[in-house]
Image 1 (cartoon, rainbow, N blue to C red):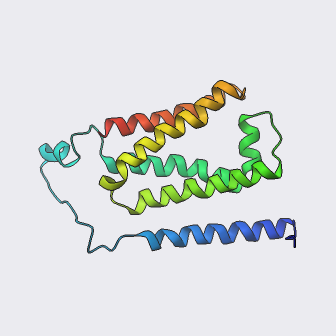
Image 2 (cartoon, one colour):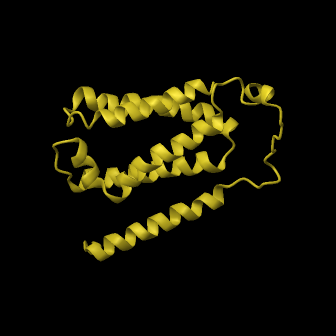
Length: 169
């Protein structure tokens, strides 16, 4: 049995997927009674509260949510345009499937970064960001002959976000 391959069916599927994704954000939110709030006024204690980093772990998480969220939305909603922007390749059904699947995964990670405590998510997010930078934009830049100079944007963006994570250490 095959599903109809119409624009209306595809639009409906996107709407259902986005609705499920946004609804899952609330499901993953920790109960507010279990999340301790740190309220400390003196500016001199700011670095101690943040673990000594130049920027806060919350700032790093928020930066990832915005930056990676924009990439995730493009993978999910406009994969053909997104891929053609960086490469001289035609997208077949197999790669279109994986692009949308990756978009969902990226947006899921962004949702977790938004609702979970930064102290818990910081190290896995930093390691993931560095690994994504190496295995994603950098590897593509070195091996897949992307369009230049536009492909420098994801390379720089991913590693700039990783650099912010290192500043939050």
